[in-house]
Image (cartoon, rainbow, N blue to C red; front, side):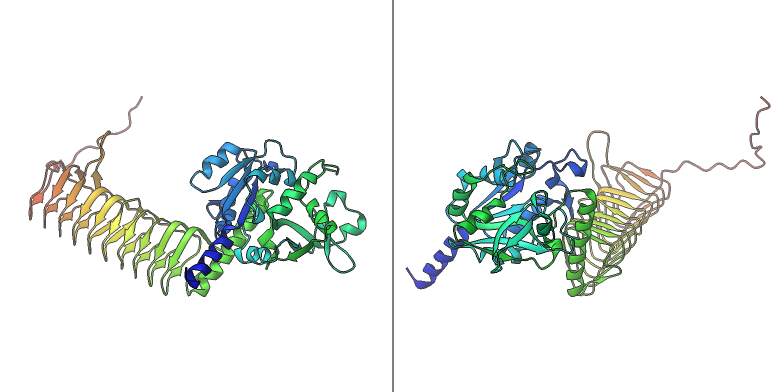
Length: 469
């Protein structure tokens, strides 16, 4: 075996020697919701998913989620993940929750996280784990101006952390301590398996506190190595809607700053919401109030007007989206004009320089190069060739009540205003449909199709008056 392969094996073994336990069993009463707290969304994704994503980046061998209240909802929401579930049937404290995973743990390190602390960063956890070995336990602490509600870190004369006291059990002097417990800690599985069975519920809450293992470690001469996050927001948990809203804005602010650093022009970084992944080319401009969901890609020079919603879509270079447009599952090749007040539904494909104007809705529609649907139209289940012009008020009648049907409009066709194209139907190259027509039969190339009734004018016609009754 070569030295390089041996090194790779050692690195892989080190990566595999980690279990991550995420506590997600709480009800979250103060959220006033029937949904488990950790399934409430931040940036469009359940909080627990944010924590799991960070955990997965640590490359653990096993990832455990402790469930309790709403266990089935959590199992269903996370069924596409590699998580192992442990049930805490009764909520008897954090120590009791972690104890439900003991039989599943390996023999390496164990990291304990919380499903309602969604802004924790990988770098913070990596630094914490680096301190853990047989003689060191890792504890993440935070220093707060107002530590109310948090467990306090107690240190000896040498400055070593020796215990954590919960607020309800703290003395007046201990309440003055500003260094607080975040709940996030790491230790070896051997240590955890030794300490958890010794936990006691002899406290004000009648619960098994995981924090009591700190004192056990100190008694054994195992040093408690502490680390702190870059900001307090990183370890802030969610207990109510106000905290949820605060963390949402903190997340969006962090993301907006990243976009600004990449050169994206944001009219107001405080009025941006990204609920997924937003990738931008050079010189992208985004106005206020825009929401991006799922996977969105904006090419070079794309401009997004105010109050647009763009979901799972790609907009090619030089495209302009005017205000209040909704784009969902669409692809625009580039140099496209969209909106204002346009709605592009899934399956919409715009070729280069195609235009979809104000109050136009498209669905499963291919719009060819230089084609225009300028205003007040619906085009669904259709293919438009190059240079097609769709007049105002035109609709493709694609649904017969049971099945969807297709409309094909060839290059350079002109569809007059207020026309109805009853699918399945084909409009030929260079054909013209007169305004106000209902077209239910195919139109050949270079043909005019008109289905209006003959106009009748009656001079001096008496307009009906009101009845005397």
